[in-house]
Amino acid sequence: MEIVLLVATIVFLANRLWRHWKYRVYRIGPRVQVLEVAKKPQAEESARILLVDVRSHGYYDSGAARIRGSIRLEPNNLSQEVTTLPKNKDIYLYCT
Image (cartoon, rainbow, N blue to C red; front, side, top):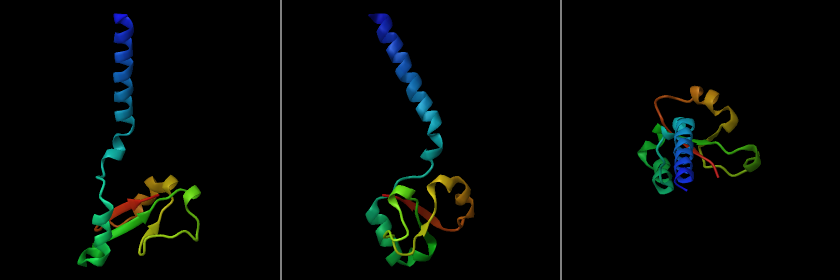
């Protein structure tokens, strides 16, 4: 019984470490509350922010409602498209 528990613990820890390593790149950006972002376009900060819609094809079409002033980037190409975004703005990504 102890050997089964030991093996299960090792497998669990190995899985957690693997997941942490695999998804480490996604931990660089903090999450922001919706109300905090919603206030920014009305404030004087509006010139310093960029809102980016990253919905996938299944949730987005040309007639879909978007936040006013936001731009649309294809999430499958995000790693390439992120290089074209301005460096002098706070960038907020959103999807539904």
